[in-house]
Amino acid sequence: MSMIEVLQYEFMQHALLAAVLVSITCGIMGTYVVVRKIVFISGGISHAAFGGIGLGYYIGVNPILAAIPFSIGSAMSIGVLSKKLRLHEDSAIGVLWTVGMALGVLFIHVSPGYAPDLFSYLFGNILTVPTGDLIVMVILDSIIIITVGLFYREFLAISFDEEFARVAGVPADILYLVLMCLVGLSVVVLIRVVGVILVIALLTIPAAISQYFASHLRSMMVLSTFIGGVTTVCGLLLSYLVDLPSGATIVLLLGVLLVITSALKRMF
Amino acid sequence: MEPVVSIEDVWVYYDGTAALKDVTVTITEHEFVSVIGPNGGGKTTLLRVILGLITPQKGDVTVLGHTPHPGLASIGYLPQHISFDTSFPITLFDAVLMGRYHRPLTGYTPQDKSQVKESLEKVGMLDSAHRQIGTLSGGELQRVFLARALVTSPQLLLLDEPTANMDPEIRTSFYDLLHELKKNMTIIMVTHDVSVASAYVDSIACLNKTLFYHGPTEGALGKLEDVYGCPVEVLAHGIPHRVLRRHEHD
Image (cartoon, rainbow over all chains, first blue to last red; front, side, top):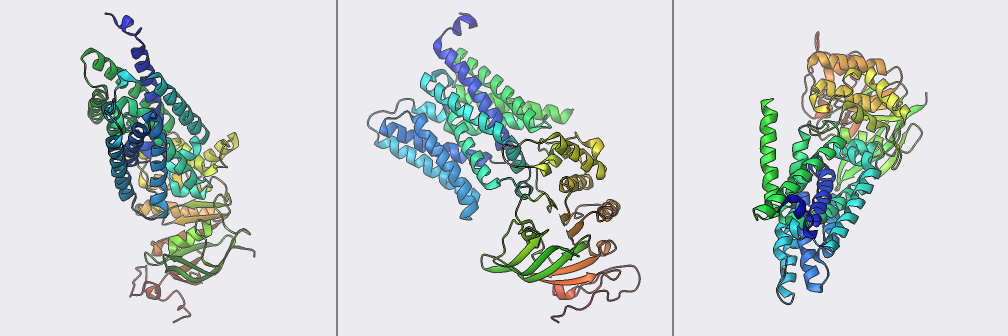
């Protein structure tokens, strides 16, 4: 069977569309996550989102939709907890990370019957993205693109030098929370493809690779989108042809790419 | 002369501990003031009060006729040890452009961009405008951040330990630059670099929670032990001598 024929399957079209949507998210938001050094905050948010997935099972709502309030809620709480309550950001992350996961486990335990697809929410499966989830991903991607388009200057300023941004009149506190919410939304976009546990990889590795080459935030976003897109599609094909789990395959491809680029960067 | 900064009876507390106690000082136009004092003495807090980042629990602050608040284009600010990643994807030009920030949903104008060029020219960094910021040396970087502070053509310039990571020769040329700028603005500089600074500044204020304003430096600097709370020797050319009056509380 040729690749062209494969493309006629609906699940393959969905998977390719998902790859595009995911790469946009990881290009734009991954860039902020890396330059603002909030990798582990993102990890905390994605694990906390698992609480929402569990809740979705329990009340019979699409788990991806139920994950949205959880990831936004945890994004806001990390932002607020660390700034207002003087709880160390580090500890705030640890609390949300584990409490969210624990909630998810409990919800799934008390949900009647077997939890189908549970494994795909944990580790992702790009070959089984349903239409409903694709629509959610399109909407969230649009929100991310529009918000970043509107506040690009402010996000750049608070990522580079928050103190100076404040002095220059940037409403830094509120925009930091907005940025955190966008990270929360991007986690939801990525869950279907790599799962809550591997989300950090897509938010980190493409941006880390492109940081070697970019001298503008914008070009870093474009390059990470491209890297994310290519590796996601390669991972998708490998997982289809050789029957490997797609999430893990994508993450490993990214890992190898990072090692190669940093070695090349060191040599030249 | 109209005061540029007028601080009266200002107290600032962090979690119940006083960071500034009863600080009163008036700084006039075209004055170049150096604020010295031990670490934790409240020097950065004082700058943050002038910038409007901290509202004092008690006392009045007037800066250029306003109650200070962030976003005043008439104040230029060079923060202490800017903690950023040298691999941050930004060029000098874009870093300086941030100083021209207006308000949300408002882009930078061509005039903003020409101001950035002018400002980079002033500090001698225009040729490198499109280099990534991590390719600069420490001294060059401080010049860029000075350009960012100058890009709104401020009347008041606040510098927080600007020469901390500079080599001596670069330091001297940095001070020469400030000396030039002084013609058009008032400068308040927090520094540890007492001996060099004293050759350039008009007046010195010693801050250790309470502020002692010494007015004209009378040439160089001498006794600082009242502020530091321990004997301090300042090495200068010639025989050590008293150059500052005793604090009146003594």
